[in-house]
Length: 352
Image (cartoon, rainbow, N blue to C red; front, side, top):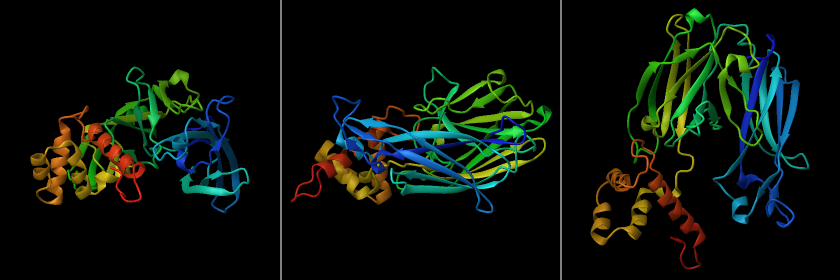
């Protein structure tokens, strides 16, 4: 983001950590907010192009849960962020989880070029993905912390980026198309979306302030701490009713100067039920709720035809029928997954 001073950039590093990778310790629930405690610590290191460490920062939190099952959850996360002001340079950023012995458990690395400072150059930033969690508060945007990608869901997404440019030249359009489908048994559609982006010099996107709830706030310029008049906030919506799993390409173009940015991103079904990934098994798992004739009919045809029959069956129960993400189908097969693993016996591997 633009820095508070002309010679710096503001960098907000956001991350989330799966409960399953955290070392929880059992404690006395009568004396504590929960029965199990984890104290995750994250270290972030900025090294310049010569490998010299220019900044080191850390984050930690106390995380309480009430059951052992939660400590091994592969669906729940804790999230955090750090805000830093950095001088111009190319940086290699390393983010890692560390334990009390300072041993690395997991880490991620990426590069960022802050020589292209928004305060000084007429450029466009890379896009930021988020969503409005509560329609009663449309100016609060929760970020997708998914390595620059989007999750497959029934929520509309918001794309936000910044342009350092004269107000008379702030005119942007966008174009998005699908270049590769995923989970093609269930989704094999084409997507082409284009339109005019909203460009606003009187709005700012304020970084997260609350350690427990990470959201960004769209505010008037007067509320922000950035006063430069040449920063234009550019935004547009991505409707959930067209985004199915796959790889996409996005171009945001200045309609006057013809400058543009190009980004590829994925729509990921990160928690797709395991039982749904195998169409043969998924069709067998429908046996529990169908009569014999329905079941026999469902099992006829090619893999893609069977997958379509499964999808069609659940459409009548879909609480969000205008989007391709079907919460009812998802919930059923997540329960099949749970039963498969949690009700196994020595003689019967399939607990469902």
